[in-house]
Length: 461
Image (cartoon, rainbow, N blue to C red; front, side, top):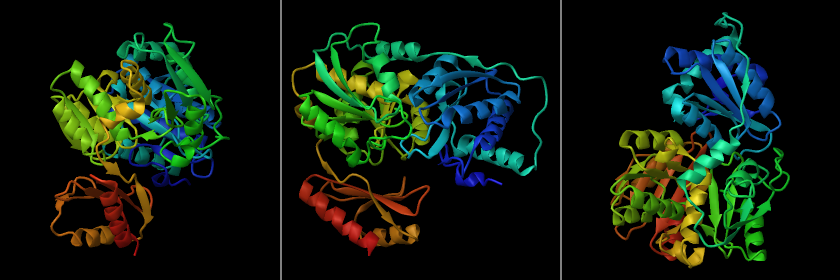
C-alpha cells in the first residue's frame, strides 16, 4: 500500500509518478477532499480542477474528479492552467479547487495544491493532514467509499480569457512607454498564459514586444528545469535579453505562479526588490495598509514600506503562513524571497503574472533603465539561499546559536541572528530534507561574505 505521509507535505501533495503515487491514490485523495468539504460545510456544491503541462496531469486530475464526485459534488474542469489561474477560478466562482502541478520539480513529479472557496489555502493545519488520514484509510481498506446518487457530469470550462481580463483590470499597461520583454516560460504554463495576458491575444493592444523563449508546453523540460530560483536556469534568459537589447526579462516557474526578473544587462533583480517595488505601488493606492514579508526578505523591504506610510509585518516562510497573515490583517500585498507575490485584490493568493505586470507598469512609467530603477530598492548585499546537508539539524542550530551570544535572536522561523552593524543571517531546517538553509545579508559585500563563510564553516565542520 502507498504511504501517503511520503507525498502529503506541509502545503501540498508532491511525489514521483507512478512509484510514489498514481491515479488510484489520486482518486482516494479526491474522496477525502470531498468529505473534508462536507464536514466543514464548505459553500457551493462543486470543485474546480485544473492541471499543468505534465503528461500525468490529465489522468490524475480525472481520477481525483471521480473521487470528488462520489461525495455528491460536481466537478468543473478548466483544463490546462497556471496555478494562479486556478486561484482565479476558485476566487471568482467562490468554489474550492485542486491544481495538479509539481511546480518547478523535475518531469517525473506531480502534485496537488488544494484550496477552499475564495482561494483560501489548505495546509497541514487547515485540513491537509485530515485528507491524508482519510485517504490512507481508504487505501488500506479501513474505511468504505461513499455510495449514493450517480455522479453528476463533469462540466468543461475555459477561463483563460476571463483570467487575463481580470489581471488587466488590476494593472493598466496601456499608457506605458514601449518595452521589449524577453519571457522564458521554461516549457511551463507561462507559455500558455503570457500570450493571453501580455501578447497578441490581449483584447487591448499593449506597447509590449514579447520575445518568447520555450513557450511550447512540454512537461519533460527539454531546455532547462522550470526553476528560476537556480541561477543555472536563468542563463538562456540573460543571454537573450542582451542579444535582443531588451528592457528586461521575465522567467516563470513550471506552474507560472512565481516570476523572476532580470534587468536590461541580464542581471537578476532580487525578489526583495520586486517586493518593495510592488509594495510602493499598492501603498500609493491604499495608504497606511499592511504589507507582509517573510523573514528572509531584505531589511530594505520593511524600511521602504515604512517610508511609504505602510505597516510592515514579518511572517514565517511558506504560502500558508503568508496568506493567513494577510487575511488576518487585511494586508494589501505580501512578498517572499522565493518570488511568490500575494495580492489582496487577488483573494490574498499568489500570482507571478500580476507582479510582472506591476514591474512593467513601473518601468514603463518612467525613463530610467531597470538596473538604475532597482537600485532604489536594493540597499544591502544578500547571499541567496545556501543548503547544507546536516543529520542532526537541531543540534547544529543550537551550536551556531551558542557561537553568537551577543546577537539579537529571533526564533519565528528557524534561527535569525541580527548584529549591530545591520548584518543578519537566518538558519532554518528544511521541511522535507535533511538540510539546513542559510540566508545572509549585510550592508556591504565584504561583510556578507565574511559572515556567510563563518557560519557555513560552523554548519559544515
